[in-house]
Amino acid sequence: MINRIPWVLVIFLVALWVPWYGSRFYTFLATDIAILALFALSLNLLLGYTGLVSFGHAAYFGIGAYTSAILMKTHGMPFAVSFPAAGLMAAAFALVFGYFCVRLTKIYFAMLTLAFAQIVWAICFKWNDVTGGEQGMPNVPYPDMSWMAAIPGLGGLRLGDQFYLLVLVLVALAVAALRRIVSSPFGRMLTVIRENPERAEFIGINVRRYQLAAFAVAGFFAGLAGALFGIFNRGVFPDFAYWTKSAEVLIMTILGGMGHFWGPAVGAMVLTLLNQQITSYTEYWPLILGSILVILLFGFPGGIVGALVAAGRRLTRRGNA
Amino acid sequence: MLELRDLHKRFGGFSAVAGVSFELPRGSIMAIIGPNGAGKSTLFNLITGHIPPSAGQVLLAGRDITGAPPYEICRLGVGRSFQRTNIFPHLSVFECIQAALIAHHRMGRNFWRRSETLYRAETEALLHSLGIADKADSPAGALSHGNQKQIELGIALASDPDILLLDEPTAGMSAAETHETIDLIARIARERGLTLLFTEHDMEVVFSIAQSIGVLHQGRLIALGAPEVVRADTEVRRVYLGERE
Ligand SMILES: Nc1ncnc2c1ncn2[C@@H]1O[C@H](COP(=O)(O)OP(=O)(O)OP(=O)(O)O)[C@@H](O)[C@H]1O
Ligand SMILES: [Mg+2]
Image (cartoon, rainbow over all chains, first blue to last red):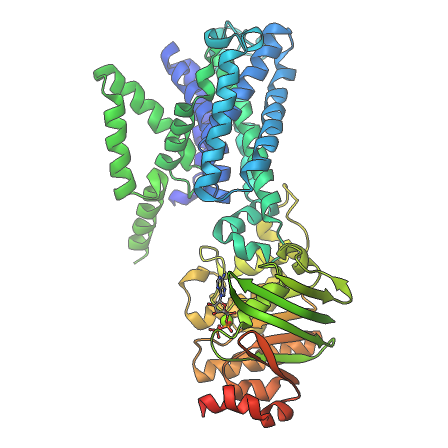
């Protein structure tokens, strides 16, 4: 029964409604969640599907954000150009950095991804002429959304609401593409590599090349998320690429559950909402976050979605019996 | 088909393989026997690109493949199984075989098709011939040791190799399972016209299907030839066969 409901479609439709029943604040939260969900899902292509632990995924988020912001603000390019360019630029960097990373394994791989991310951060931080240095680039313009007025019902919306709808549609398309990729033959090869990279070589898979491809694809989608986030945030700043951002997306992914496609999206939502709720009561957010993580890692190693799926199975089994 | 020329492998100061040469004609079945630690698995690892040799050459159909990476050697038609089962534990049995078929057909570059719809008939046929069709949907890692060995074999066969290297394909199996598996391997080798190189501790099995036998001892081939010749060889009797009787 529960399985019959097209949950993803339901959630998408509910999310589309947010500007009409919510306040400005709900739109703000929903935009944040949608973008971070894409970011976390892109990381999971590496973490959950290929078995590669990246500690530096924020680099590609940051590169995407800066690429799009520089194109739109400095060069006056339309969003229709800057958005795909952000993904491609991030993928190009991922290809170069990844070339070195996939030559290492396990913790050395992770450390090298972190090292490259810190280099990206340092460049954003210091290259004043292009990136605005420490001050970042404030006032990234909204895309031109005047065309939305032609769609009945959307003309009267605030800019922020219109942008949210744009984000929602673009994220949905990107996530659909990611979903398609993980169930493609390419995705299957990644799972095989995660399961047993040694054996994968002996069925004719060039493991490093596939890992590199996965790294670039993950970078591409992180770059798209970054481009959206820069506009949403009304500016891009060096800390987009900082290691704490990499840690945050890693936590989201693990919190939601990296063993399930939608896990990281759930993680992004739960973490964002918790952060909102808790910071309005107490300043001890890191303490609470730490405690949640400890409970999670010991109690629910499969993350939130892992626990829900297990509970669902138990229910249906009882229902059948 | 396969030719080894004076192959060596040293680990530090220790010679695990010390000058092995032989030629394996197309379509033949050869067994490598020898006591524990003789260097059998190391020899297989050298042939399949798992580890690079310290010296010597491996030729496949006249082509030098020494030091090539495993995925290339696999694509050239060399399949192998491992002594210690080496499968994809969280995939279903079906998915393990299907993945190997996808890799073999070089479909892995495809980002758009749905992998679960691919090569279903071939996967099912292979599972049937291995006798594990009823376990298709179980996670591979949850099955019995004997079944995992069969999956191991299935993964190797899915690459449609011309030459198949099996490292103790029946290790840890019961006597009945061993016989079934060996019959199966012999049948598949005959049907597909495979060249087969295998190691095995069960002498009955070895003498029943091998057309030639190489005896490895401390990294050296101390005897090589037809089963009757090897059985009669006095040195072999002393270092190996005698040891077990
Ligand atoms: N990677 C390695 N590093 C160091 N020594 C190794 C390595 N691999 C194998 N050896 C050594 O090489 C020798 C031969 O090992 P190998 O596994 O090839 O023997 P084997 O004939 O397959 O034995 P078994 O019948 O037990 O499978 C052993 O002494 C082993 O300890
Ligand atoms: Mg061995």
